[in-house]
Image (tube, rainbow, N blue to C red; front, side, top):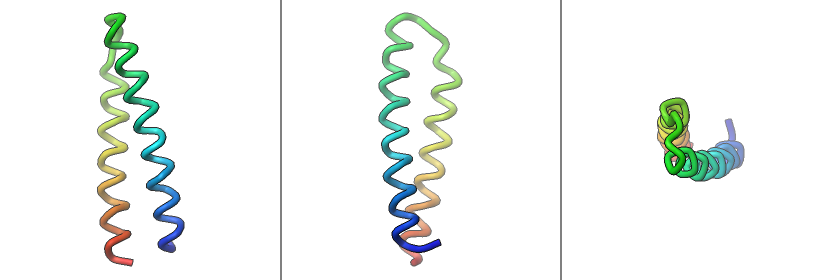
Length: 58
């Protein structure tokens, strides 16, 4: 994977992360089930860590 591809994936994940955080806040405010969103956010955080590590290695 090239540096540009990794950077692009990181930007996409960051945008998704922000969207999920906003959804999570809305769901919390109405007392909804936030478990699935929290899991998605955690998965994105792990993927971002992995991609950032790959970026340092490239």
